Length: 302
Length: 254
Image (tube, rainbow over all chains, first blue to last red):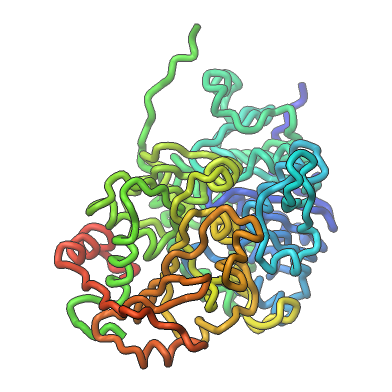
């Protein structure tokens, strides 16, 4: 079998095109900034970006002019204020106007679940008494054929590509995650193409020794990228901590267009790839390395 | 404002929220003051409180104060870590959540919360983060607690956008619309505490040193006052010690 292992450059070049619908998931945990930076470097345009929490990663893509539309449920800098590039685009059309398609977290989870199940919609008991359906006509209602109850319904989301960062995977893309799981499984199964980005590539035997931890099977994976520290300033449980100082400092950077562009020039356009970013970050990344807290082994025998 | 120099308004708000939690409550919690309130209650009268974060951490016992609801310290040593589908579908929609903590840029006389836009949705004056999980928490949690400093701007008679429904238009609207949860139970501000009667906010207690005039100057409508207006209990020395020495030693939130 030919290897799926490719560079980030080649994975983005091959699977992310202008105008595509793209999901880079990870709820605070395992957010693949390395992939976003490569998308910015390759100057993709007119993307529809989907994520529960746009976070700094989509703030950067929006400010870099890659985005036409945002599908989301909470656009803030977690624990540290607003996303200013997002707000500049929405309030002032800088660098360009973006369309918003807005749900709540459960609405986004339900959309990806329907997409993964190849169903047209997902029902949920939600949105009564809120203004969200007025803001987004795609939030509709459906009558239960069994009880007659009126339920909310949201449409399936099937992105062109999902990019999922994981702690470890084999070369075929069998991918294992521990810690916060977010909606990565649903996003991967819903997408037409899935790119797995791993902190480390391990032998298939390592995956097989602990099959319950495999969240995404290689059979739905198109490309595998090995990218240590690929989530920074987000984190990877057991590998490195969240760079909370950077999240706090992002306010000052994103508030000012000049500082925002200077950041991109230095840390995105100014490096060839994530390896160079990691090298240039030097000691400030190494201090984030995780302490060890191991769990006991389980017996898979019979 | 709270003028007693022995404690801050935030410390009083944390203590009051903690006291209103019951032992055994399953709480959908965020970061900041709600997180402090839950951990204070756990150390005092409610050791069996279960904390659930929308990030999927169930029964978390973080060793450091989390700065985000996705902090890795919420995972280490928690009872369970599940997907967000599980959290929202089985735990929240499944009816397991007793108390949900919510915040808002605006809250109105019916307890409706706005975290979406100030001004018109299509042409907002200020674009806020949006719902996150707040909309479904407001609909499903059995009781909703709100901790928010009050001002005329943040407590208007009607919010610009209903992100998370309280009692909608008051009266029996929640039941009529089929919402499983009972809605807002308490609103704790820097001036006093509010309950709800017939779906409308009612001032039930004033914090030490605060006056009715201050309350009226910092709210956008003629808020009703309970017949027996109480004085909010001050934090005890032990409560303050736990908050300052154990829960928030670097004074991130207090």
